[in-house]
Figure (tube, rainbow, N blue to C red):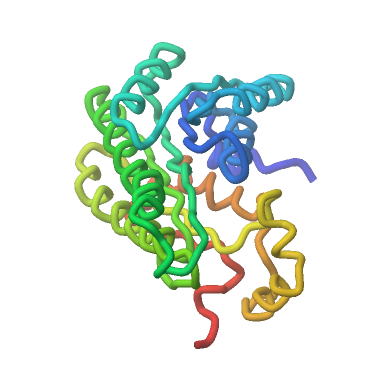
Length: 261
């Protein structure tokens, strides 16, 4: 059976310019590929452009359009300069995927002020800087747009040894709602994608270990997510399919958040 053209067009990003932060690996590189295959011109933003540049070549080889840009999300000057370069390459972005994030794993009483600042500066302040800089440009261009902030189920519940990360992601969720309220008048939608545990190269060894099996047994769906599980929710929030959605959190976690206490 051939694809329904209405469904295909509903989730299409053809003609859109999309920025993906944290695009050097993991979720960010996967998101960039998915968005390019949906028709977007994708700006891959990361502190270093060597890895994103390799992904650009792969996307182009598959018929997509992409370019890599240096952006330190913790530095407002770097964020502004990258948006200038992206606009010169294409136009003011239509969609921003706020994905850059880090974590420091150790007990709360061993976390240092530098650990806390590193995580909060990237995950929360970085999200704010990118979202607000992009939104100003969308507003000034009079075009509207969509911002998708990548949070985590740890922004709604907690786990041990990642306190600053959980705090930062709770802030990302509230940032999403606050900006959704204020930016609606400019036709800018702001939503949060809230993944549970997603298997990537960085965590595969742990998630397939005995400790990972114990964690999986506490998830109602008895599974971890794979990267393609995020594709549909991502495209929903980024495309016109989600045109009436703003201030929403979309959890993709096999029911982890509704597990019994």
